[in-house]
Length: 546
Ligand code: FAE
Image (tube, rainbow, N blue to C red; front, side):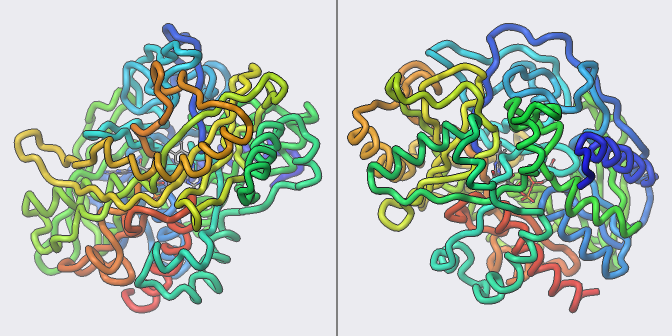
């Protein structure tokens, strides 16, 4: 990065615009209840794919799987076009910032909603959601029966909104995560490659021990260790030098201003600064933002027809395009890819997909909770929005709990956790012809194993500390945030819906590259595993299929 991260980000934005034009945790958000201030508008930059165009490779989605595929294909000399339903997020709003703050969501914050749907819906018992204008904002809170699935929307996918926790599963758990994949290869080659490609590093622990902004995490460590739980540091993709400068007051604040759920204006290395920047540098990758793929069907003689809706920032379709591609990579995320494939199989567009499509979907066992600390155990007014640590009780109790921030700007005397748990329940997508929608059959009651696993940690900590659960964060007297996930996985599971490298059965030239390949759980936060698996699969595909 440049010595001046502000300048580096500005120049990244500029070059990103050219890139697009060339195409012809973690935590809950807080806001005061009421109506949001006048909504900043973001102009979409650049052109887009032309109707009737033919491309060698079309990638659906620009998150982790899609970005890895695009980079490696381009490096192998293949021209790639990426189609992304979200915006390009390259132009500041009227407040001078590209992204809204977590404490003050506006219409940039949510995908096509007229009221925010913050993961933490209440504070001190009061509802905190507010009215906003309908806009193609950055965080989609997509409602299915029994669960709300949070996902990033825009070029960069989930990397725009996530907490940057870059966790490699413990090796002894890998067989349970991806049983058909050679673990030696993953740990010797593809996890290191993914971590390097993503810019993953550890926080400077001597700084962490003293800085105000990680007091909440030190309290989390103290409580974990006093109850005998292993407390582990986890790496992140945030630029730690930038965070130190934020703490010193020499640069504009981002993680220390609570930015995360609705984007980070500085400091976080999203895919825009890593894989997608390198893809751009090849000169072979172009992107159409605000374009949503609606259909993929075989063309007689080879290749595929891809139907695409072009959207405006209210979500209305302004044009419908049909293009052709020799090969199509589904990288629309677990939900996006599962919904598309379920629809395409059921409606006969891709009739040869097998019966595994839509199956094996899980929530990575996500469940949230808060604990009320004693008044002498303050967690701090200033909290970095980037988590750095967790409580690992996976072996004994089936839970890995991220010590998450509550960056409200006030002292809350609360400890907050997102637990990833060993939850065996799996949902399935199916096509509802009457509504014209793909539906997921999840039930909120299926979170009970996650709550039980999380309780193996927090019941004991509460007992040791003489503390209680917070009951004011998810609704009146509700302890568990069991209505949501940040980590959708599965729906087109590796070696079931696809072969062991992501090739969809029945339709040569169609591939799956994203979190839908992973059967429901990764035992830790998922994006490093999604990236490493994509690195493994695309290496094989480049070697044998091109
Ligand atoms: P993803 O990144 O979701 O990319 C899919 C892309 O496809 C998106 O940009 C979509 O807009 C686009 N798309 C979908 N449908 C279509 C369509 N029909 N046409 C065109 N484009 C489409 O997929 N994970 C971690 O490891 N560590 C964390 O700290 C962490 N924190 C998180 C915090 C939040 C609030 C959230 C929401 C997620 C978090 N995650 C975290 C999860 C992580 O971001 C997620 O697993 C990955 O982004 C999934 O990567 P994929 O490539 O599968």
